[in-house]
Length: 337
Image (tube, rainbow, N blue to C red):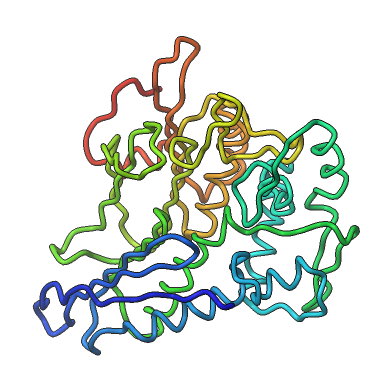
């Protein structure tokens, strides 16, 4: 059964001066999460076009949609992948190389094993993990034209760490094709933005404090980032997507090299990049790599800026950020390096 994209035009926010149009606000759901979109246009609301684009995206890359291209690839069916699949696959392979394999879209079986995917196993044991590691690894899969080639048929792909960011970019591209120059697209906390908001300012996006909360109710702001121009921003953290197994907190960031949840000192990683797909992928990579390794990697990726909240050896929350993102911060940061 195909997943349904629910869309709703919330309001026409304000009519801008100079004949540039009206700001509209949309909200809906996709990928088991919600989206919020604000944009200015003189064409009227684009609700139906946005919903149709997200529905098509869902049919390509949503693993929860059993008829999606991704789901069919994972079942080893004969299927030609589309442009969206090719784009996200190639970016995922690039980030995998740069991160030394810490970011790995072949980790789907491990993600499912630990209860964070589209399936869940009842038991986790070293033997089960070792058996899965035999067919996990980004170098065990490649594209041959429009077909996915696997070294092992048990290999499965999961784009969960990059797809929401890419979905933001896809909607942003749609808006730009419709002549929209001012917009903010947010899907599950990942953001693609351009231009100005209804107040004539750059878009301001908050970074939440990393407080354990699976309900999503706590939204205390750690910081606010001002995004000017065409930007993508994504935050990854283990403070919301986790569960307790045998009395211990199990975080959703899985290290594909070991098969176990990553045990690093980073509590939250926010990345700003030219596009949201890139930001989304590197935010996940930061969480799995740990502070020192992630910051070293970032030196070789000049297009990204980072804001990391981590716990020092005494458990005190501290911040390390790149000079580029420091210029985007609205206000002051305490306990920063």
